[in-house]
Image 1 (cartoon, rainbow, N blue to C red):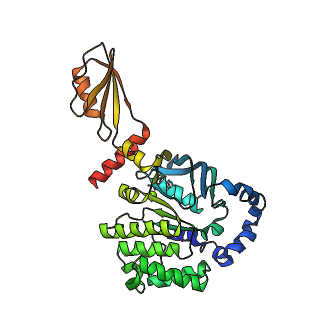
Image 2 (image 1 turned 45 degrees about the vertical axis):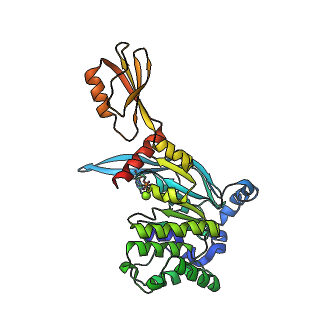
Length: 367
Ligand SMILES: Nc1ncnc2c1ncn2[C@@H]1O[C@H](COP(=O)(O)OP(=O)(O)O)[C@@H](O)[C@H]1O
Ligand SMILES: [Mg+2]
């Protein structure tokens, strides 16, 4: 919780961050940045997107104990040369399987983590260099952790945020009233956070992230573990936030329904790489597509008799192409062909996006 808190509020920054406020942060220790960095947010900002990533990477050094006094060092490339732009007012889905690099991306976008390489700007600000100043313009919700004070009644967390973000009193009250109504928090304000259900806590967290009127809201798995009713409440709220207030939303999830119901644009990440960035419709096509098994036989033969739904789609001399559902393993098909045909060589062709999507659809089917 400490890590997240410090990222959001600067509360753990030896107290300089939150107390000095946005202006203080600029002229304080980060003052150096307003020199050369100032130029970047000047003229360049005119045609730049609200969120910009150029070749952003994050490599973690991991040490694994492999025995007595023995350690193995390994590098995990959690985010691998990612570039994208998000315009103000967009609501974008950022999806991918577990371990894909979604949370690492969000943490870099908040300034909690510093990229290993590449360039990253949010509202013209370099998040890791000017985290406190950025904190006033962004809101973050981590579905798997809370930014609320566990033992305090919900409303006390909000009062603390009020002071930490130096929200003007009238605006704080107005925002709180609106969020309490929209997120149905009226009966929960006096309840200690630890007594809230997961769905209630999530709504409480979302309100906390929005009290200071951020221009962009990052949500990292906001619907994880929620029941159907809570999910739909959260989705409805996010839709309204984006359309009514124009808040930019970056929604990280591995729940495809979140995306289907909320986002026109979706970015797919897998193994740290951006595999797809485009309209949701294109994603569906990719998700339902097939992979191709290319086999080289010893000689020219009639089309292979493959078990449905796999089928030969092309024959060229001793080479044959078989299409099969992307969601299925190639192994049984390969085994069968190897057993019954004079097989010389084979390969599976799978545009990477399709494999990712197929995997996600398969996950959803078994969820
Ligand atoms: N602090 C860390 N130290 C080492 N490896 C990490 C750390 N954080 C994340 N990783 C690794 O980076 C990869 C991406 O993780 P993450 O961004 O959390 O994925 P996602 O949110 O998409 O599930 C994973 O392989 C994960 O184990
Ligand atoms: Mg994650």
